[in-house]
Structure formats: C-alpha cells, structure tokens
Length: 205
Length: 333
Image (tube, rainbow over all chains, first blue to last red; front, side, top):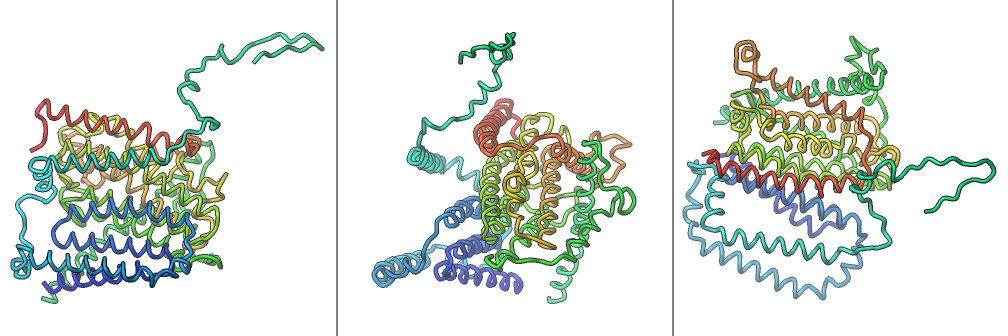
C-alpha cells in the first residue's frame, strides 16, 4: 500500500497546488491551464478510488469540452488584471464570508459522514462484483430516473436559453442553401442564344 | 516489497517499450505510405530515392529536422510554446496503452477502455490551442480557434457513434467489444455509422478535406506557423500517430479488431496482431486516398456537416439501434 499512498499524496498535492495557482497566477490563460491540471489530477484521484467511470467522464466532459470553451473565452477577451485587483480590499469581507460558509459546510459534511470510520479503516479498496459503469447505470435508469430526466430537462432549457439569447437573424447575410444549389437544373440556369453581330442581346434578369 | 515494485515497474516499462517502438516505426513508415499514395494518385512517383523504394525518406527528414535550429519567437510564451508539441506527441502515444492486439495481447486492459480512448483523443485539442496561443501571432491563433471548434464539434458525433457500438456490446472494455464481433463485424449492421465515424475521424485528426486549421492558402500553416526544427517534427509525428490511432479505433469498433474475416483454416492461422495491422493499413490507405482526391471544405460547410448532418443522423441511429435491440430482445446481458 506504500505505492498507493505515495501516488495518492502526489495527486493530492498537485490538486491543491494547482488550485492555489488558479487563483494566484497573474496571467488568466495560465490560470485556466492550472485549472485543467486540477481537473486531470482530480480524475486521477477518482480512478485511484476505483471510480474509473467518474474519472473518465471528468476527463471527457470537464477537460475535453468545458475547459476548452473556457480557454476559448479567456484567450479571446483581454482581461486587464491590475484593474481587477484594485477592488481587492472591498471584496475581501464578502469573499471571506463565502470561504467561511464553504469551510463550515465541509466540516459538517465530513463529520456527519456515515462511513467515516469505515473510510479510515479501509486500507484496500474492495473489488466490486459489477463494474461501476454497470452499477451506475442500474441506479440511474431505475431508482433515480426522475432526477436523471429532470436534470436532463434543466440542461436542455439552459441550452435553448443560451441559443435564444445569442442568436440574431441578420437579413443582410446571404446564407448558403445547399438544397437549392444541388437541385438546380441545367435548363433553368444556362441558355443558348445566337448573338447577332454589332447588336448584342438584352439579358433580362 | 520494494523488489516487487521494481519488478512491476521493470516489466511494465518493457511492455510499454515493446509497444511504443513499433508504433513509432509504424508512424515513420505510414508517413512514407501517405506520400507515396498521394504521389501515385497524382501520377507522380513520390519519395523513392532514399533507401529501398524510398522507405528511409522519413528517417532522412527526421535527421534534417533534428539538425535545424529551433527558433522561439521573442513575443511567445516560452513554457507553453515548448510544451505544446510535447503534449500533442505524448497524448498521441498515451492512447495506445489500451489498444488490444489479441485476446491477451495488450499493455493494459481496463474496464472503461473506450472511454479512456475517447478522453485521450478529446485532450488532443490542447496541444493545438496551446501552440496557437503561445505563438502570439495571428495565423496560429486563428488556426487554433478553428481547430478547437472543429474537434469539439466532431467529438459529439463520434461519442454517439461509440454509444451505438456499445449498445450492441454491453461493455466498455475494448477486448469485449472485439469479442462481440465474432459473429458479424459491426461495419455490416452499422454501416452508416461506420461511414460517419470515418469522416468524423478525418475531421478529428485535421486531415484533408478538413485540414482548415493549417489551410496553407489562408493561414500560412495555422498553429504550426511559428514552429521549426524538432518541435515542428513532433507536431507532425503526433498528427500521424493520432491518425494511426483513429484507424486502430475504427478497426476495433467496426472491423472486428484482431479477428480474422472468416474463422476458417487459412485465415485463423495468421496471428492476431497481423490482422489488426492489416485493418489499420486498409483504413489508412483510404485516409491517404481521401487526402489526394478531395478538395478542402469551407469552414461554415464543415460546421454545418458536423452539427446539422452528422449529429442528427447519429442521434437517430442511437435511438434506432436501441429500439431494434429492445424490440427483438437482442440486448446483451
């Protein structure tokens, strides 16, 4: 279990150090890269716990998609950090309040945790009978189907909302209509004309 | 205790080496195949001077790149600039860990193998974004933005395609996925998905006709513009390693991985890795042909294809597959 402990402490250290770097680094893009490092290490911790499905989903969803869009936005807008830092003292009490609330929540959660004793005793992760993808599927699509569907609906509403808020139809924009392009026939677009010398033809369009 | 760990580390490193050396050599050879096919389609000869049939052309190119000077632009963000090609190359090699070459022939066999592959291939976009941003120049940045949008879009349809295959298998394990194709390769019942997977793989690896991130006519060379010497070569090798990986994924998901086409005497005497390699080569040959014969897409058409054509079709196919499996009581387990 020595190797297990060493790897665990390594990833935990990376998680904490990169979280600190996220809020303290001067360059926003660097901050996002540290956030990505954070996600990756958290995924590694999940895998060490035996929750390989959760770990992979964290990688795919958070690192592969969410953080990419995050990085996109941060790279596109030029944030002046010294300007942001001027209001630091004004926001300090509010920030401290949030910090204290989260800290209390963490303490309450950990102390009230049913399996706390078991967690400390367990030195070895028990090998489950079914793979955790299978067991998650068994729970989500049977006992928690309502919550699953509701969260899906919430996401759908959020997605439609985002599209409605940002979508602008410009009439001046000429869009490509592939069906009309493809369905165009030869005789409606090409015409053969005899052109008399020195007279030319009138093209009506 | 310690000796046990050392043993594990030693044998695992040996396994990894035994996998990575052939992969790297294969990447070098595949570059040559690509250029030869490209040449032959255009009635040229392609590289045929260095070594027998020009086989050593890639080695000569690599040597040339090694001896070239690495130039880091003054305005570049140095750490990320250097890190970007390293990330691309190492991610491309990382994914090979779970590819099974036979029933018991793999570096590691994890329960969520296909998710691992999907995760690693979705991380591939970071190498390009990092390169584009760290170069601190217009063309690389535009190329990186294009590529990020393109890869994220096509990943969605690849995800749905993987879901259809998984519905027929009932497991996320790559070995199980191949074994499930003993009766029939998934390319036959799921043929439309195979086609969409192939086209999405082209887009995912930034291959022509979807090579807009490096469109030389508009963006010089996209995210690679500021790179030189060995760092450029790393991007280049990483790209080909990724292509090879996508071909491997395609043959595992749809062409029955290491399985012979018919389970009868002359076919099943050939060892399993050879079958997988043959299937990868077949897919790569089509990749190379597509590069030679199809003109480049316009960017809005690329996005339209991804979101308005492939996404609905693959979503529909997921529903269709699951309904058919459910109705005829064919669901695995």
